[in-house]
Length: 313
Image (cartoon, rainbow, N blue to C red):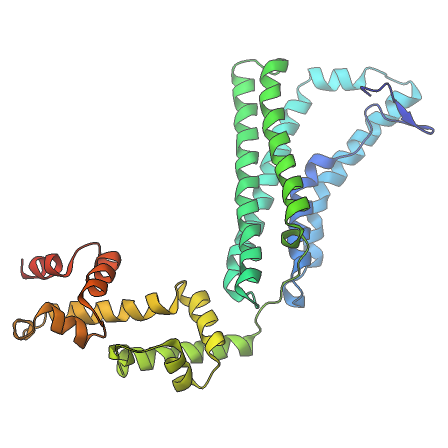
């Protein structure tokens, strides 16, 4: 219209009945669902009801569109605008989009731990969560903008309206930037673990905890990921990936958490006076005093000496 193009062929563009606002979040909802290859997490027939608001609004806009083109009432949109319909419609579609986005965010978080594949694959799934949070933030800011505009009577202020236009434009360009520079984030399918794989993971976790808690294999100062992998009879790479995904830490940090817990138990035991801090550290699997002090403070927030003193008090 800025270029004085008011029709494509025989189709007038003025007030064209395209209910895109009700399709923004719904489009993302079905996009995320389409990334999951597991059938039971796909789209159910009832979820297509999410298109209902867009259909209803589209039919209403089509009705007005026909009235304008037929010449019955060329001012119908002005009358509807003056009646306040479009103001309330802004609130309606924003709240609708917000509810849809909250629903899809819950879906993303729920299946976060079920994604199969490499660390990068899981990071791609986490990006969907980041995108959703940003999307929700943009919707909330749009809602606040509408509330302030209505409260202060700024509905007709172009300057105030430009604020939200700039915000939405930045968001759209950010999506475009991601699309051009990191297209692998946008066009990637994911597989979820099935029940048998979940049972295997649960069994593996129990076996790991057996060796760490019951056997205390971490007390070996030279204990490596290959040693635990050998005990579990699984590939070293698979074990590292499992620990990263399950405990959200590296193997070194994972082992050190057990070593620190061992130190804490020894420091508060009745026989702790028999041993020096260095002896306790070595007994728990630490190979040097410097690494022991650094790791202990990192995980507890206090030095071993401070912890020992606090435990006496």
